[in-house]
Picture 1 (cartoon, one colour):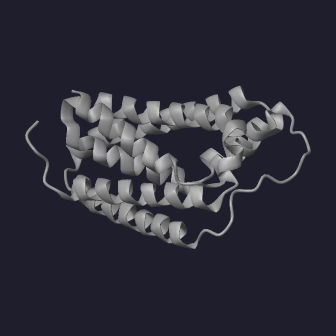
Picture 2 (cartoon, rainbow, N blue to C red):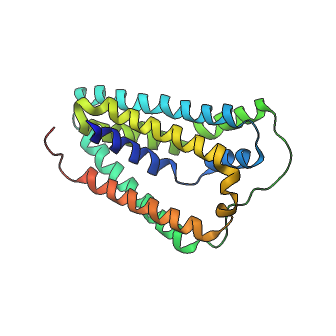
Length: 204
């Protein structure tokens, strides 16, 4: 039963590690030490809600329309392959580290509103959590709950590590080489997950 949990954790972590506007925002606040706890909780709880919608929704949808699952499986695999290509391309083309600009403090309300906008108004978030995680969860039958729990734990682990570890990691994030290694690792995980999606499911 640990396989669905581990699979969910690795998939959730590989998806969330892709550096985007939300992660850069959390990193910036973490480096400045502003509103870290409420912001990382908002990000993690938002992901948990979306993951639940994806896992529960696809389970019911697949029972009603069984053709949806294979269609979304191939679409999800294509998405992972493209993301992997993008990660490898970024690994070979990165020439600068992530820069934190601006020293103006942000109010708690402003931080939370910005965090919610970057989360809920980003179409890629729905593709990652509701569509992709929801689709892959259908492969685990009784283990769907553990799969979802693993993906949620990955979100919590990542956001808390990013928010509270930002100051310690600032010298590393400033180096292009760090992002090259990270992006290459993300690409490998994406392609490995795509291969698992495309391969026939084994027995229970």
